[in-house]
Length: 286
Image (cartoon, rainbow, N blue to C red; front, side, top):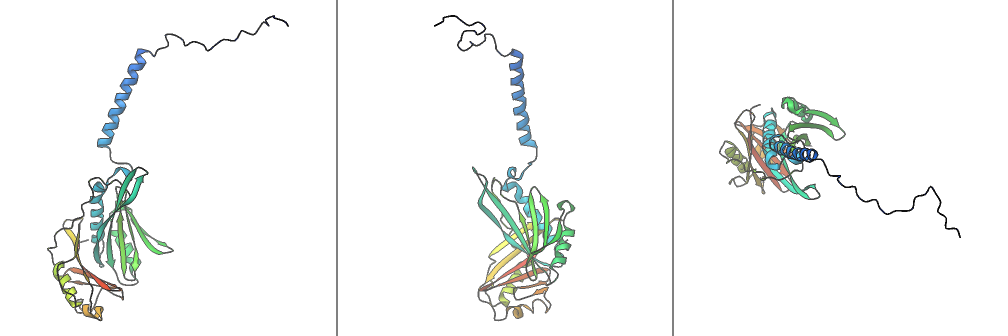
């Protein structure tokens, strides 16, 4: 057995020891610290001064005023229709991320219109809404649909709900709750109270205090306000009972909806299987 060592192959060695003196230069360490401080400062300034860039950065509290204003714009654009504000709904069942809960604010306006004129009224409303909303109406397989953007990631939609009635919806999408949404309506103090009581009495109901009051700011100042009552026991022919209040010529008269205007107040009766929901609204001037 040969013990000769073959030339050209160095004997095996262990790991190479770390080189000494391989520290970062002081100027590089100082530059890194300065950059980190500058980046932190810019981040703080951006969070305080820059507007939100995605919906998830704008809370329900911040979006509430946009939604309320959008409802007022819709009422002002209603023209000859008969509007009724629907109570706000806050759905807390959504999630912004797997670790963050959120909520969605939805407000709506029902608008009674002559049967067969729903699409024309949708287009009329779209034309009267602010230009920045870029609102428009398109025909879909399910009928005409209005869509607009009220800003701050708040969407506006409109569609016929039944013959003679259109529903407009303003929606925030899921977002942080913040300090929550204050949807308290203003105290009912206008002529809508008398018009509501008058309609309830005509339906053989007891005219008591309204069960709900909903309001929204008008774009030109003032407030649009709806008061609402539910009548469980109604007259045998509710449309005929309301006809004298409408002067015999309602804006809408169908088996589901009866709507008219009286002394500047819009009255809408929604006939349901076991009750009638009566709304009286003072609106905005368009």
